[in-house]
View 1 (cartoon, rainbow, N blue to C red):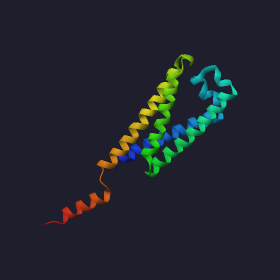
View 2: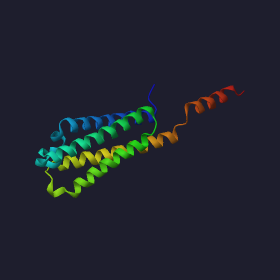
View 3: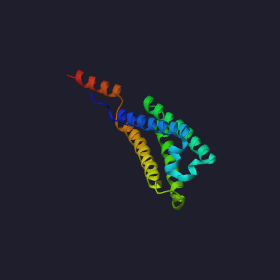
View 4: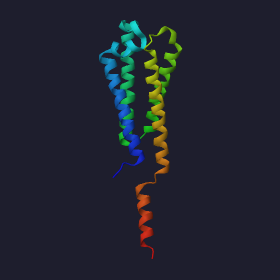
Length: 150
């Protein structure tokens, strides 16, 4: 039996959240690996390490909340939008400092923007699927009433 649309969206949301957790773990354990493509040579400074690790903690929190809410079906839209908002912020800040950043800024801005779009789309799809998919119990009750009529 195929998954209903809301479950497909939630599984995609759980995967998206898990990817954010993985990025956060890398940012905490190997800060230059995450920060160097974004800010270049400055990634080797103590200040950049602090910020990379802080962003790693943020990504773990957002990713874990997004994944957990997707798997439980509770509060997913809010977590997805919060994660997308963080990605929009990353994209806008990157764009603001565009001339000072290395050429790899294009990759970072593209990934952050795509993640923001994905999160917004998942939140919208999940909200829409809740509106168009009637609860199974209501569907079942309606079908059984129709079968019992002469």
